[in-house]
Image (tube, rainbow, N blue to C red):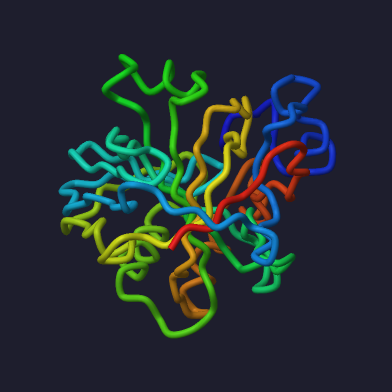
Length: 258
């Protein structure tokens, strides 16, 4: 059984009370948000947003009781867009999902939820000595969010779904036998995206994230989504609905970038 945690997604320890133990969760630059495509400001950056990903050998995945997370050791970066020429290094990726197909994504588009959302977490490795320090700095992190929609089975996601079957128990780990093609998770050319200044969506909710939400979604089948929902979380409960509801934009705006 996973060790007890000071936060979670249940009524007693869920997002509505995170601020009690993690004060930053009550800030004005919190994530996720609803993206209103009709009111987004159109913006063109000097450099297109591009993920420079390759294959990751011996990728380790973990069910940590909160999500399914993959740790990345290779030299994979993202740059361009609001990051300009500064490369941010891929640290890990994880997912958020719901108990059914009507909800699960953290960001919503025009108030519509999707069944899951992938977060590729990058850090400003040329400025900060380690990920932890970057995570607490205003310009320390950049997260590429990609929504998952129900459709055809996705061969890239299938390798992850197969790995999920190996880590159904909380706190279990598995190393993939085959190299995982990280580049297949993102659009081949420059990424069309929404961007805004925000935070981590889990405690301690540091307001250190330049958010990049891809306009292009990943297709996945209902059967593939069932692998997510078969994972076991804290206290032997099903690991579902591990998403934070959308929060107010406050004095921020979302830019739309093609």
